[in-house]
Length: 120
Image (cartoon, rainbow, N blue to C red; front, side, top):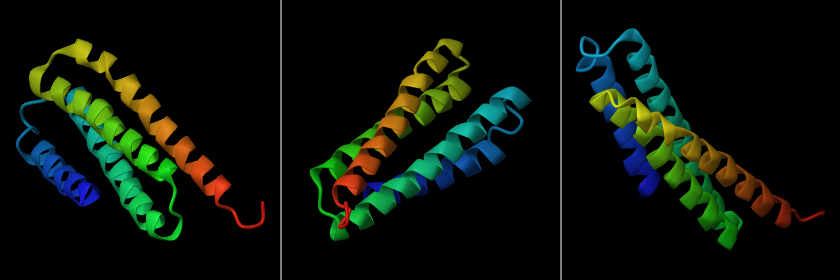
């Protein structure tokens, strides 16, 4: 459910950026907005994948991987969205924390998969 909600929001934010913000933001900030939408999409799709994997590979690590990806969307994409809407540049300092959350989420997924390999 969370993945579906995040995917719907990614579409809405992408459309908002392409239409409502096109004349409001500089080319640089519009590109920043697009980066936020792209990472939002990729990681919401990843969250959907983790949800499907949890039916075939039950592991508490999948929950942590999901939490980290959601935190990454909020911190990485959210900080870029906020920066685009407000023009407050220091919000970009939050973005790397979201990036680290994304990386950690994928590493936790890797470890969960490794632990569940049948022929390890």
